[in-house]
Length: 421
Image: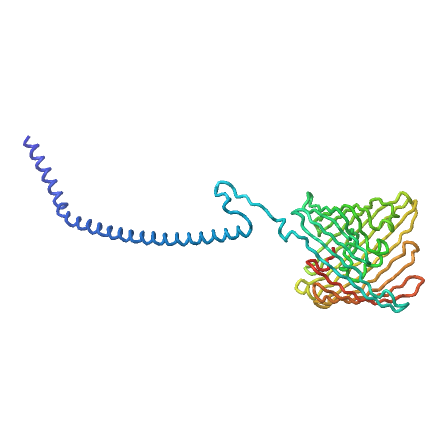
């Protein structure tokens, strides 16, 4: 037991020896704890001060937002009153989608684009008695509009010689399956290049002589349907197929009233950034069983244009030509007549364009050959007004040559200035 007692006493002595330094350090640790507590209290006071400042700033911003909201609400109320709507009946349930009522039919944007074009000529001849020297050639009124996202319409009414004629009236759809365009109505047909253009937009005062001799005085037009498709690859290629009742029915097809069929192929190639070329071909076919008549018309077209991008306003050179072949067969027999033209235009400056055209045509009835040389000089006074001076030398086999001077003035009102078609 004595041995155990001494062991306990020794253990207590050891514990007291270890605890003595800790008790000695307790006052220093207490001072450190008190210092940290004071710093925490100071930080808490700063935090409370910052929180109070944030709350005051938030209250001010809320007041400003409320004022802005009230002002916006007042503006909306005024706009609704001006529009004739009652905002008090609008739903405030945010879970229900907002429904908008369209009033597009009252918007002026849906009105058609209207264009009026005037075309007046003055003539002088070196032979014969002076007569018919002034010709108010045509006034054309054009209406164009987008009917919906898929359909557009074009209507052109011509006032000519005291008569009113619907030159074109058709609607067309784009973006159809197969990238097709579909037209239905009355339109100038896609025979060659210039036949599709309106007369006031061609490079000279009149259409080429072969075009008016073979296809009619006003060119080839008809009422029917048309399909168009553009194809890429090694250039750009256009295919047009049309079935119509031709306006030139009497001259070409003997007034049979039967459908006529036209196929046109055109190919474009961009040779350089400044030049491009196109080559095309057209085939037209119609019949009249009453007179055993079959009419075939073929055409080849060519165009080369040089237009430097940096100087396009001042320099432009175009060389174009078309060759026509007409064959009218009665009971399987007939003669082929040829005709065509070659022309060039060169832009001398921003406003001046010089040009010359050579015409050749064989008469469909007699085969007599007529040739013409037509130089011209055009002043584009502005986008809306052009003036053109032109000289025509014409010679028909077996007759003397004729000379004619012409002055043409064309002006346009509306968004479509001298539109080709």
